[in-house]
Image 1 (cartoon, rainbow, N blue to C red):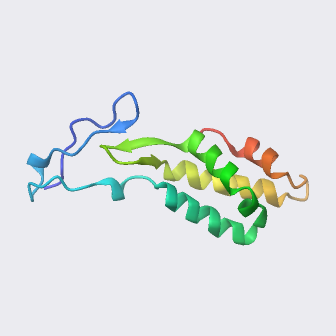
Image 2 (tube, one colour; image 1 turned 45 degrees about the vertical axis):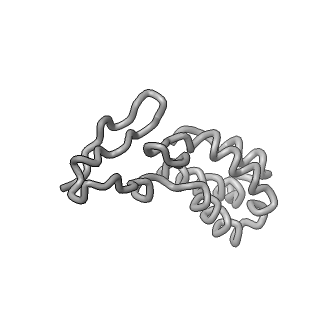
Image 3 (cartoon, rainbow, N blue to C red; image 1 turned 135 degrees about the vertical axis):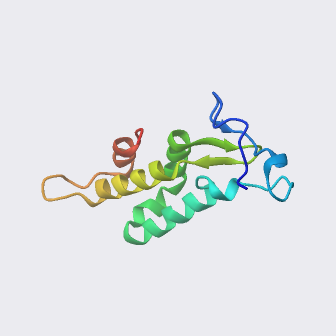
Amino acid sequence: MAPSFKGAADNDNTVTDADPSSSSSGSNASLESFFGFNESEVSMLLDKSAVSFPQIADHKNGVMATMKEWYSGYQIGKCCEKYNPRSVCAFIEFFCSQLRGSKNRAVQSVPDALQSAAKVY
């Protein structure tokens, strides 16, 4: 039997703990690994992107701060903050496209690319 939730999400973006009495084991099993990216996973995605775009590594702290401001803030019970996976992936894809440039658009600096990429997805 799947755990039931006391509430999907309250007003401060916190998903409440699973009700342990409804789980088959009766224990308060942690569900945090099933929801969102944690900070180390987001950092790993940026490291992988930095292979193709080395300027990401040079500005990683600023990129992480921007991503935290825009895409983290979800909490699973008493767990650490989680990042919205869809938003993180869309941000990284758009951010890298801004750094890459195109035939019709010049390559942007990291601060300009961050400002362009940081938005609600």
